[in-house]
Length: 310
Image 1 (cartoon, rainbow, N blue to C red):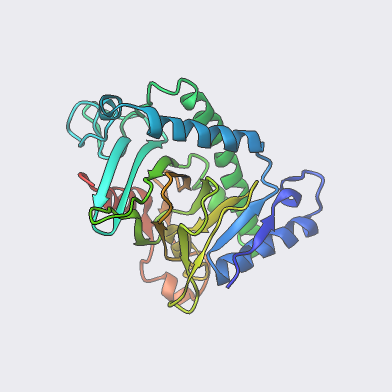
Image 2 (cartoon, helix red, strand yellow; image 1 turned 135 degrees about the vertical axis):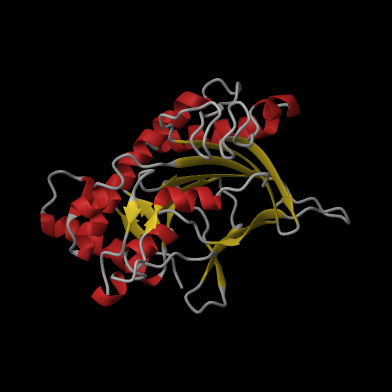
């Protein structure tokens, strides 16, 4: 299996004909039906912004003191400023090891205390440029996510409004993650992330130059292939929510991280998800199947997936 590289520039070009846009949309459609992963080029984002995101994230994880990390650690909902989801966390498990900082779209809330997921972002003090760079990056990816949803609607021949009305206030999540270098010896801790599929709509992944760490399950359900970074592209995969939305026609593919390099790996996934109050129901497939209540409320899926402590 090969993960396709899709040039999205024609779809973003306002001068492109509908036939040209449809050609690009069909390439996305094919990748989502057959693989569930694709590389996206022609996304319109300045590569300098990619470099700045990676360097800021690396600087934080490599230089921030334990006290600074603890200042912004994830706190349980019910505690002042806690919502189970925003901030720094360190994950050490038998099958996984990494550290991360999570930021999510901020919504109006009754808190503090905050409902799960609906708190306020906790930004690191250093590096000083991290917040402004991350907010600029987020703005670009939200717009890109909306554009890709329009492409999906075109390829699937469904009204654009079905998708666009449920992502116009996307409850996005930006994660800065660091996988520690793998030190040899009897006390070696695994660096990675367990096998899973993403629960949202679409994930945009930016990583550093390390190869062999991200593994994607092939369609045969047995082989694992490496999704190595390609300079200037974003690694994209669809999530369970989009699979539900398309009645299983699009595949949310299992993947995992197993980092074996002795150097730290920086990974920055951006999860483009539905609006907080969106109801997601199948828009394709068997009419009788669609009548059996397969729809889900996004906020229920999100709150069910977020667990504290990690």
